[in-house]
Length: 245
Image (cartoon, rainbow, N blue to C red; front, side, top):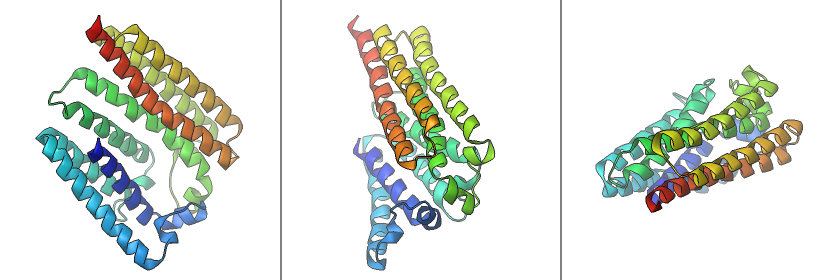
């Protein structure tokens, strides 16, 4: 969905614009590494992407448009210097997970209907950010400490952060099982979903052994990010097969 892509792009750009100090410490490439003229152009692009994505979402239907507005509000509250929810322990991860939930629900709402299965499957995206969030925070530990942020690895420690990721992985597996029991999604989709979560579990364990290597940690995080799409596809397969049987 183009509207979702523009929303995500605008959010990342806006976060870069407001996150100069931490990105510098963590040696990340951000918009502030560019000359002033290009900084201004990128700010205009960010506004344009937010506006265009909202217009596209409302062109589908009103519920999808409202969901896009809710996502934009979360994105602004997350990064804006006055609110900076990204600096708040637990809230940071809950907000990013909430954004993933809303994006998933936009896909459901764009069909013109609301379903309990759509809500449950959207929880997969929410749960993923309790894996991707702490994993990214471990890699950014130095910059987050200097910026005074309270992230999972800073507050509860690295070991407990990996335990949280494992719990989130089992939560995603449970979503597939619950969807089978309550909504009757096909067992093939459930099997595919659980296979993906087992792969994720292996990657998390591997990452826990190499968390001091930022490059390796980034590779593990990227592979787990792709698993989010694999889980959604597994849920789609399970749902589609129900209609064929």
